Image (tube, rainbow, N blue to C red; front, side, top):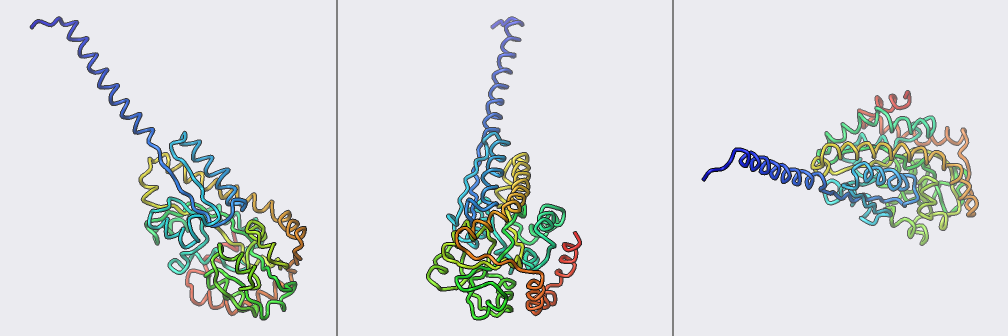
Length: 338
């Protein structure tokens, strides 16, 4: 059968065009693959980290991936307590979580997040946890936990003590029962101050305070408000003994399975989130104090003399920490000098 050259050329061109269109269609489908991120958060949506996760992280990730990565945030322990969230990210059932340091027994270096009286002020803490010290610890963390990435360190709060019993001076600690996190630093502080400690998950704490299982607890004023503890507490002693952090952690298999550009978007969004949260938290401290006072809570500042006395009283704890943790002296000195 005779086919003209012009007809043959036209067939070739048409075939090439059809194949090109087919591959272009496949590429387009690949580019438009969507991903979902469950973010577990044990804190309330009104906490600075909760607000920033919604207004910065979710917004930035969805916008910069053109909606191909969808973020769903579950606050107030909806996906479980802090240990549940940590284990969920670690085993891949939760993509991202905002946690404190539930891994501090496995990775003692993370105890630095709860080191007492470590900073000059909250502004210094913000600089430390959004700078190179945090970046270095992120790398160390992934070496310890290969299935998880540490993305960024945000603010928990400057921790204060609250109680349903009188708490306006150091002597008032004696004989009181305080809920403390499952952390040897927190437990040691309250015991050195003459009180007793009981470990209770955050999502069970309101009930424990309401029913008198414990007299008080230690958290920042922002958390007292976001968890409505001011409804069941009468006194706040503004010790600011720990400026604690909340970490954004991510499942490594999930992150590694994303296109490289989406991984970069998520990492940048996490960093931007913590920077915004620190700024938001610092600006909220004075208004949080006023809200507590307006709700009938007696807020007592910790004077320089009180602070010096507390530091002296908890010296057995800090001496023990330095003796047991070989990394501690170098890292705490580095932070204090930053």
